[in-house]
Length: 206
Image (cartoon, rainbow, N blue to C red; front, side):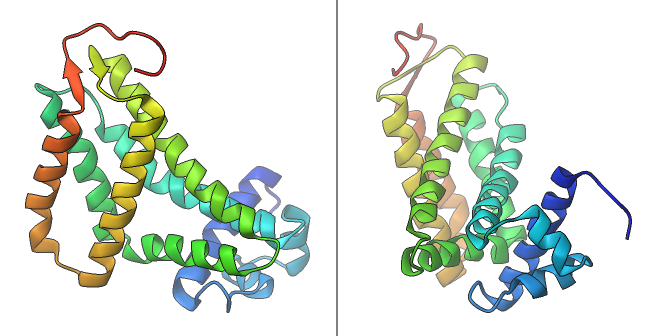
């Protein structure tokens, strides 16, 4: 087995855990099955992760990064604010459609963490990461365009996290892809209405 830096090995094991959990479910996924999925020995797993909590947190962080990275890449200034916002939501939606098992896993991880003694803080951390990710995206958009928000950044970030969380679960349950063009158009118009363009930003929260 080739040696590799510990950070790279942790990423390898985290991605293997995501595949195993998405396929078999979180409760049925063991450290042994993750090591087998990654093609490493069990001792390598325990060298990289000293607890299952550490692994679950790494999985949650990585899943969040998967979807946020595609939105970050798409969220560049376009001709209008509406086009810019729409492109970000479209990138996220395309990721949901391409990787439904990953997004389903995020909900399963939340429920698992809430029910498993000692893991409760991971569910809270998961949703804090969602808010942090949207804060980063909002600030990215503000730095690339001359914008002033009608609501504080933390409020908008948490609102966007709650809205996309609900919309994603709605799609995973109902699977109505045809309806999403109108839904994304509606969401885009609503979010654009919370932003004033061509106005100087004032303060850190507005």
